[in-house]
Image 1: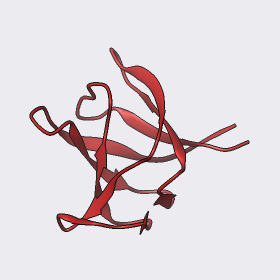
Image 2 (image 1 turned 45 degrees about the vertical axis):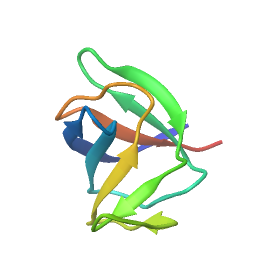
Image 3 (image 1 turned 90 degrees about the horizontal axis):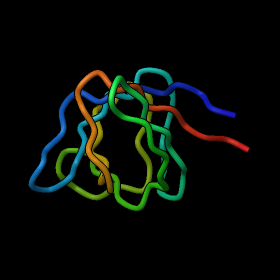
Length: 84
């Protein structure tokens, strides 16, 4: 099952970090996300989260967070939290 939690605002190619606005939910280390857009469709586990350029264990709804991605994402791609 998937729940939409936000969207990609920007993707930084050099560091593979996506800036994500969490509009609808929280995200924590160990969670699995699904990123979907026109040319994007992949699932990955969260290993790295940042808030204000500092590592965090959890990001809450309403925050902008940085997520280390293993594939390329684009602005406006939707971010879903995968739940069992």
